[in-house]
Image (cartoon, rainbow, N blue to C red; front, side, top):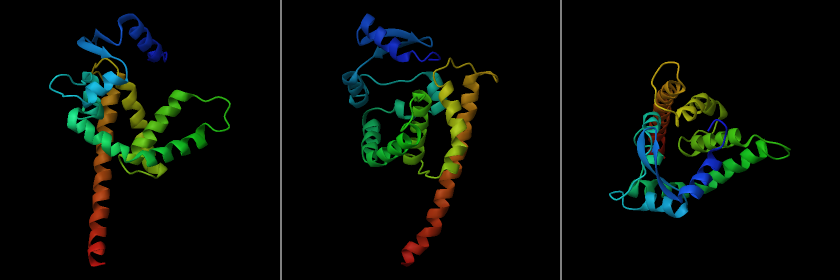
Length: 195
């Protein structure tokens, strides 16, 4: 991942072992699947037969109910609600392209795509439109991403440990955000009822 060779690794694995193969990932027996049809089978199929399961490091950082862990009805529900947000996603992508890509001869695609993903998450999931609100989360988000695919060694100086701490900080910030929105809603509710 550090050399940005994931895509080549995936294609080489598919060429060598076909789209379905077994491997060991962080010491855990794992089934590797590749392709749209297989992903559809995993995410929309019966979770009693086969399910998407992430590594321990991902679950520790993102939580047991993260988007990648959802399956069956839960995954369908989230997918359907995201379909309703396509217009808002499109708006974020257009702003991003105008700001970072248009008129540029060269761009660093990976950092910009991480930035775009972050902005879409902030807008859709958390309703954060203001740059100042988003900036509180940005550094933590970057630290979380860095530790997601690492071996889960919980020592203070490791990147994985920093990711866990960043995840904890984000959870605290989200609790504050939810509380603020709840207070705004509570204060606006009497006015709505009165009108």
